[in-house]
Structure formats: structure tokens, C-alpha cells
Image (cartoon, rainbow, N blue to C red; front, side, top):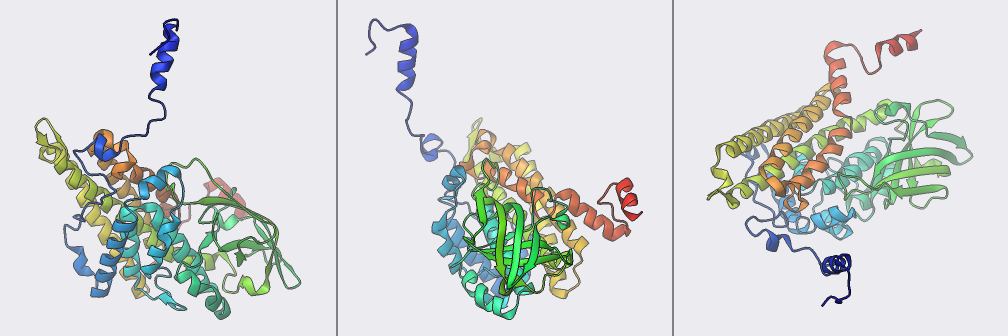
Length: 438
């Protein structure tokens, strides 16, 4: 009871305080009419039966990955996404899938087809984009760089444990001053007796706050070319701090890396990275893999909306019965079919050895654009629940934004393709480009 001498303001404060600290209702109790994403919906987006395009081995891998992430990741992803923390408990589960290392043959790696590897990435992204980014950074960037550009000794030393996720890697190219203009990086590598001294900063580096192995790119102070190095966790002079306050891929631990005279022995200099062209060899493959992330995200959002519209009722009928909702759902489905087909074709071009940088860039740019539209439509279909991470779509909506940006923004990838089809580079304003030639 309130004290009879209490003021009206005191009574209001006491009444409000009675509710402070109460835990939120479980979403299944607060909104029982539709199932949350912790119990993931069945896959229903393969309308044109593209699964038939996959080999039996690729189909089996797809099924295995799907079952694992639906069981192990879906129930916990919202909690970790909201806290912006990484679910280390799922790493052994992901390791058991034998997908780290992707197309790399030998050294304990699975030697998958690029199509199989891409489909595996899509299946992880279908349930959680952050977990797929964790795998891509570790596998398609860091491990692939070691495989393509490392010595035999480095491959034997690092790849087997990375393939099992016994150790984790990150890949550090982007800097505070150099994002899209990555080739202009300012981190330096100075040759000294027995090794190199690395000085500089990196930003937005996924996995970096807990990585055991850091693949770093720096400018050789003698040749002025880009070289690659492997730095181990806790190296003297190495500092990594977490980037806070992200609205997307919140589970991914992006970091700021500061290197203050970090010594790297000669044995950890990657001999196959002697210019930015060597870095681009890795990016060409990873850009294909990244294009499959939005494919997976769009598949998951479609699956979620398909189930939601049949469960949720308004005006005495399920939302699936309304023409406007069907129209949006069909548009989403059409996007998923087209996105999958372009992703699949990119893989086949890569396997033939005929894929060009422009084709990879167009694929990544166009697929992420269509995924943006698909996820936006999904957000509309879920109404108020479309802004709750419990129902996947809001989380996917936010997670897609950094994917639209990284591995080349939409605009940069467009210009890569534009240069290929016109023969004219337009990355710099015309006046600047002309001045640089003088």
C-alpha cells in the first residue's frame, strides 16, 4: 500500500517501479499465433528445383549443413545477436561439418567443389548471416590466402588446425583511411635481420578479437608493393579491440588492429604475396562465396515469411489469403530463383577457369541488391513482428547491410564490371585521373 502522506508523484513512481526489472515474456507466450525463428521453418524456396543441379555429394553436404545449423544455431542466434557476443559453443559443431578450407585440397582440408562450398555457406547464412561471415573470413579469406600464397611449410603448419577450427584466423586488409581504395593501404613492413617490422592500423577485421592467426597485408618499404604476413595472437606490439555499436552482423566480432613495431619472422612472410594483384586472386574466389551469403539470407527470410503468413490470422483469415501478401511473397520467391541461378553459374565459370573479375563483381552486386529487396518485402509482410529479431527478418534486414558493403560495395563492384565491359576505368573522378597521368 502507498503511504497516505505520499504525493501523487510518489505514488506514480512506486506504481511504475513495481514493473521494473521484470523479465520480458517469452515470445511464444507473448505471441503464440506464429512460430519464432528459434524453431526454424522448413526450406520451401527451391521452386524451380535447383537442387537437381547439384551433384549427389553437394546435395548431401547441403543437407548435413542445413540440419546442423537448424539444430545448433537457430535456437541461440537471437540471444547472441542481441548481446553482440560470439557463440563459441557452436564452433566444434561447425568444425564437425568439415567445410572450413572449402576448395583447398590436402593439409586436412575438405577439397570441396566451389559449388559445394558455396551452397554450404548459403545454408549457414539462411539461419544466421553472422556465423556464415565467421566461416568465410576464416576459410575463404585467411585459409585460402595461406593455401594460394603460402609456402609448403606454412601450409603444413597452419592449415590442418584451421581446417578443424582448433585455431581461428582473420584476414586484415581494410584500414581506417583505406576502405574501397584498399590498394592504397598505409601499413608498412620494414625488413630487419631475421624478419620484418610491421607498423600500422587495420579496421573492420572480422574474428580479430579472438583469432589465433592474423593474415596481415602491408606495404614493403623497399619495393613499395603489397606483401602478406602471418602474425600470431598476443605478438608483442599487437593490440586488438572490438568495434562496438554495430546494427548488423552483431555476432561477428569486428576489431580495430593496431600494430606498433610488431616483429614477424621471415618464416611467416607469405612468399606468394608480392603485389595487390596477388591479393586480388583471393578476393576473386571470396567474392563468389560472399555472393552466396545473400542467397542464403533471402532463402531464410522467404521460408520464415511463408510459414508466418499461413500461421498469422487477421480479419478472420490467414495473412496468406490476402492478394497483396501473395504478390509480395511471389516477388520474393522469384528473386531467390534468379539469385540462386546466377550464383550457381558463377561457380561453374570459376570451375571452368573462365570467370572474370567483372562477372564475379556483377554477381555480388546484383545478388545483394535483389536480396535487399527481398528482405525489405519480408519485413513488410511480418508487420510489427518484422522489427523483432525473434522472427529472423529484422535481424536479416540489418545483417544484409554490411554484406551489401563488404568485399566491395555495390558501387565499387559495379565499376569493376563497368571497366571490364567498356575498357574505361572510372574509379577516380576524371579530373583526378587526368592529373595523376601528368
